[in-house]
Amino acid sequence: MKKAGFLMLLLGVCIVAALSGCANVAPWERGTLAKPHMALDPSPLQTGTRMHNYGSREAGASTNSEGGGGGCGCY
Amino acid sequence: MIADRNMKIILACIMAFFLLVTSAVAHFEGNTSPPVCDLTYEDGTPVQNWPEMKGKVIYIDFWASWCPPCIKSFPFMNQLTRDFEERGLQVVGINLDEERSEAEDFLKQFQNKFTIVFDTDKQCAKDFNVIAMPSTYIIDKRGLVRHIHRGFRPGEMEAMRELIDALLDETI
Image (cartoon, one colour):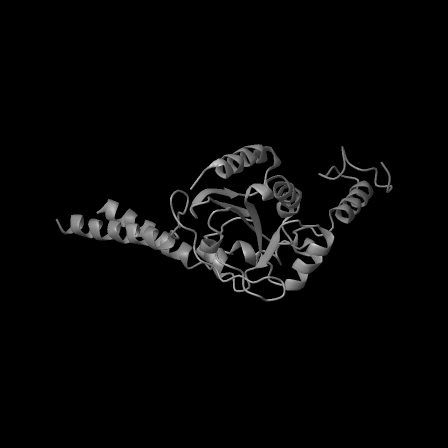
């Protein structure tokens, strides 16, 4: 009976996963997704500069500043 | 006993679920004819179909303007055309762009020495079961699909050239 319960649960998970709205995107439908402005970070250089400035202004260590910034806007 | 029966039913449901969600994969490689396609040239005139090109080795390449490996594959296909056209190789690039203007802009930028055709309704790509961009299908002189290649990696192209060379040497 326990096994049947587990299988019921598994079936339920499968059905929920199928109903979650995932859809296959055909290769020829990926043109819009491939455009640069559709990237998660459309401007990596700008983001890098901003994070660098932010990290150096903050006095704490962060992923963007090695050992923490001085809080003066400089390294 | 009833529990066993229930379990069998549930297992059958799970199996049916996986059969339903697993998409059918058409397999052409080997001694199979390629699907007949309804393609057009840039000016809208229909393209002759694969059986009419029998006797030639056909290199069919599905491409789109937004796909970086497709850009890399263009010089390779130009070179193939230069090297093997006289021996009977026909390179056909089938464009799959959703916007024709994007393909036209691309073709202005990247020179092509081979035939470019358009699959307007994408039915050809569906029938060929294109799952990657670019996808290459090589048809031998008898009109059978002999090789399928997905993607474009320069390191693999020497083997492709050797295969085409061997297919061109075949007699019907």
